[in-house]
Length: 336
Ligand code: NAD
Ligand code: WQD
Image (cartoon, rainbow, N blue to C red; front, side, top):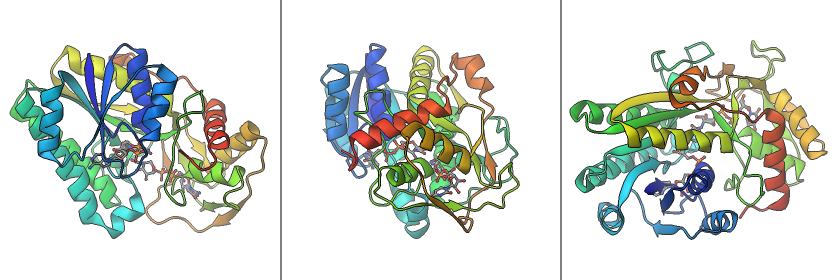
């Protein structure tokens, strides 16, 4: 059964393609490679021993999308394609609104025209905003987002909810990811940020491998056990497996549902530094730096709805996440 994976050459998309193949599905990738390389697709093929159909195509290209739907019998779409850099979204908001929201609207129009009305969407814990207390539950009100990137996720959720409200034959699953890290056990695929990483674990990995001198710990005066920010880190393979459950759900029934994909556990920046040092056997030098604007103290999920309704829960712990991130980083010090 063919599943269209937009953004399938990226970090989470590539891991999800491996798990789709492991579960007997045939992923078809659309990606414009604006934040990835086609090498990741070759690596998925090496891991799984299966050839993957790949279209180098932008999701805003309606004619390109129509061709993909015409040439394949696509049962459902997992929609990862999007820009995700928070600081860039502040300096270039139009780029984010156009790519993420405009792209999703074009994708849904092409899906509707092709009669494919099943979609799993990559949303984010960022839609809870800064005011809801953790553990975050799906029935909490969406918050005020703190940057244009987060606003695109909030609006896309609204677009997809409105689409379902207008036509109940759609099947929509909104997955709110917490902080995905780790990599496939083979060390062949992983997160490959361009330039200096914005996110904690890619930064820590590059310090450990010697590409960066030290980590700036952004604030140690938060109301958390050690003063540094607390997040719900989730292994990307657990996250990928959550998508398999979500695909099964959209294939089975129409509806519109929202799930947190997190572990329910919070770790501080310094917890992550310690776990990474243990996993890598390397020192991770750090200095305490000012808070990063827009950051919140604590963010972790209540993952019980996904467990109850999708039969999914994250099983990989922080040690395994750091070991797998390190294997990827040390085997591929310069990425793909
Ligand atoms: P990623 O950048 O590695 O993957 C996204 C992929 O989409 C890239 O391969 C990129 O080339 C592609 N893409 C972007 N715009 C496109 C367009 N217009 N047309 C075609 N392809 C396009 O990012 P990721 O970490 O794998 O994230 C996947 C999705 O999950 C994104 O939507 C992101 O916002 C969301 N998400 C990520 C995180 C995280 O921390 N990584 C957390 C929550 C949500
Ligand atoms: C984690 C913790 C930082 C870097 C971001 C997006 C969010 C989602 C996931 C997509 C925080 C601290 C970080 C550094 C540090 N993405 N930190 N030094 O901010 O929780 O979430 O990625 O949807 O929308 O905002 O993740 O990895 O950037 O930060 O001390 O160099 O690490 O302050 O406490 P964040 P992160």
